[in-house]
Image (cartoon, rainbow, N blue to C red; front, side, top):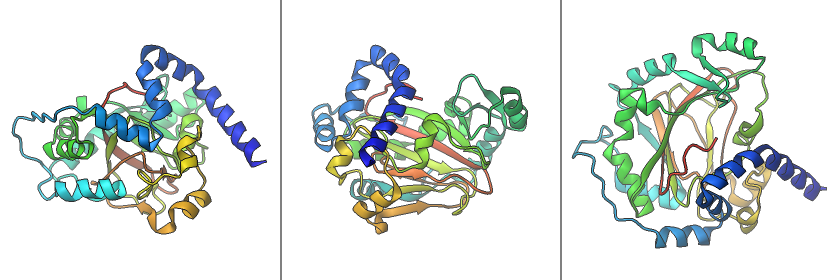
Length: 302
């Protein structure tokens, strides 16, 4: 019975993603290779080792805005646990980012057909007969100077470079709302709220900052520490990357399941090869700013 349920989930997922994966694979066959094989620890480490690029961080000798951030400590935490908490956006930049977030255009559920402004969200939901669980803006760094400054910060780049032991690239910036409503998550978003790991590249780190206060009912992010390097063999070789809470806690231990909540402006850096999930906000909308660093850029994969 369990095998039948797993097979049905896999088939439904493949149906949803087949056309997208096919189009991406035709344009970028290297992405298909990465997506197929980067789930295996040994292959990830071998590819990273044999494709190293010299690190050349030419950031104009600018000073980091994260003056108290200890790069050595962050890199060690990433290597050991896949997670480091408590990175704070400076108070002089946060208001500009919040102002931008209120005025920006978002895509309802990540769909290019459904752009909306926050003030018009309800109107657009009625007009399109859709309920927007999520609203994405996929390139805030090109629209907001404060976000652009964070994206160029030398400490963020140095952390990525030292974690990869290779030249990183900023693959994407994005900002997104998760709205507190009764609508079920649809399509790809369904998987965001179950434990899963991402296959963004052979090496990847994401800096994520809460832009709203997030408590236990406000949609916290949950990360399984250490699962980026101690993944169960069946979790590496399965085509399904999603796992239920019981299976995760039984194998990786309750002590490693970390629920992250904090005030607006505070963030964390994570290796998304760790198992992680979002929790749907219950009482208030949640806003997150993300910077993704990788070794290779495969473009925006929605």
